[in-house]
Image (cartoon, rainbow, N blue to C red; front, side, top):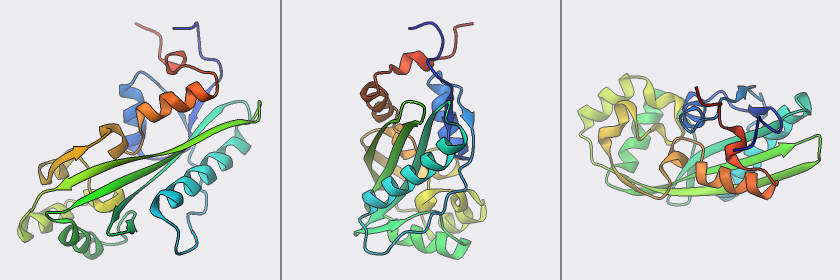
Length: 203
């Protein structure tokens, strides 16, 4: 591992899950929420939408922190070519779970790294297939009542209260939490950096 970070690392997201993924991987980023507009034109593929929003979030924060390496991410769940972000209400969350029950869907996460001082950036999308279980209507109601799905893309997570209702995944598990560590490693490499450069010092 090289001595010290090459530049400050900033996560352009208020997602607790993304922050936890990075910290569990030995990276302690600064956090600066972008506040970027998340409206998009209709008709775009889900993978294209999450990449557009990731780019937008990273760009907004990079303008504020030109000294840093900024990571922006955005996630959506795609089922039957329809993208689902965070549900707007408990009713919507329940409808989403009824549609997902017993089905497989793809969780897409767009990633964008920007180092404004050098003018360099790298971007990419990761997809992970999620196989949903078949919770009863009472279990769905209880899960929705917990409030957990309201803050999650696709109204689910593979951890927490939702974990028992996920039968399995095919692909990168960290991506389902909103940040693909294998993709992040490759994007850093594209910028001439190593993920180990950003590990916290051993205690």
